[in-house]
Image (cartoon, rainbow, N blue to C red; front, top):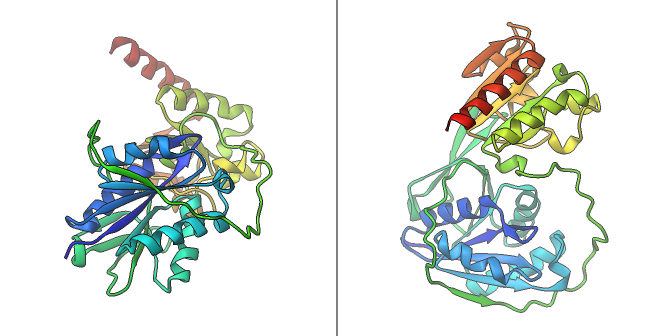
Length: 325
């Protein structure tokens, strides 16, 4: 049986995040021929709404209000609950991002619904849809089927491929007026510490450093390699604790979870807490002087050597490949 699916599109600095398009693809599979409705919440966001249609949404609803310019769970939940009341969807899909992880359980609990979080794969469709998600820090996977009520799910970035973009695809874009009131939190200023360029959680290539990087300056070649490959820089908790880099780069059980096409681990021993945040990467390359390091147990390719010798060699090789291309 086909379903109506509401999909939240996330806007960052005026542009839709890639996970929004992946969520539309997930919503399309769940809908099984039904209607996929995109939802964008913010201030002055109508301009990007048509892009959700080009990636597969049948139509898009926007909620704009000055109090929604910066994310707060109070403001966003008021807006989304109003749209849910109007649309009465059978399923609601969020990205498994900082925003999605904060917002989805709050809304699900308001509606007395369950939540399937951190979905990495969807099997079946419609009434037979099954969600697959990692458990026990990625050591096992479970299959979840929602038997009754509204389906709530968050999908992990870089796991469900977006549908092909159909430029110029037509779809209705409408707005809903919601009076955002009684905010318990007011954001006065946002100080961003994350690196410029590619978003770490959505990067196709991640170059991560651990304690073996030895210093803040030791991250310089990692940044150079990541920029060359169009990727982002990450770090283990050990590197963050040692003040080699900011905690916004931390990957692991208590940091970000990433699933890039290529993960280069430089000077990372492979502690279980770190592995939990990157073990589902498609290709893992480990660089470490210790041939017995745990990271080699999950790596597809291992390089036993000094990262300060290996990384510059990789940079030169990739530069040569780009020149020859």
